[in-house]
Image (cartoon, rainbow, N blue to C red; front, side):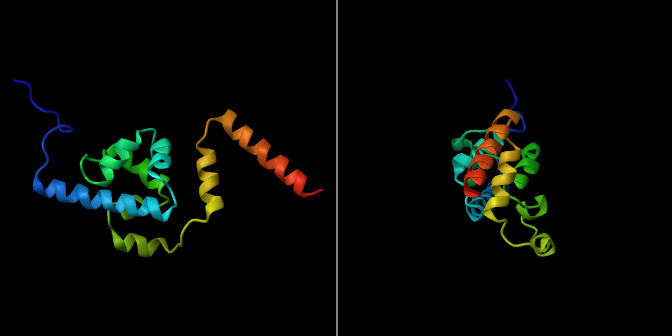
Length: 129
């Protein structure tokens, strides 16, 4: 009889409640950042269905993903996990759209970054005429 690994073992009710709360927090933070599930999935290199499963608490968010998830949502891990005092300590408002775009661009492969920069430079050059 094969035993279940910790990732596939059935969740206790407390765990289910915790992951539903964590998932709803992820969904709210994602919406606050103006991201779709598809966009968040692309940043995390997972499927949109997996993001949806995390957001409703159907699947556990792996500890190994917390740092990338917090970065993608522009929050500290403490805030992601529900520490409201960490949110107050952060003392920063919503990240401006341009800053979010720059973070996403910096996560692209170098060739795509160069392409985006060329497009921006072309637009700026045309604006300067």
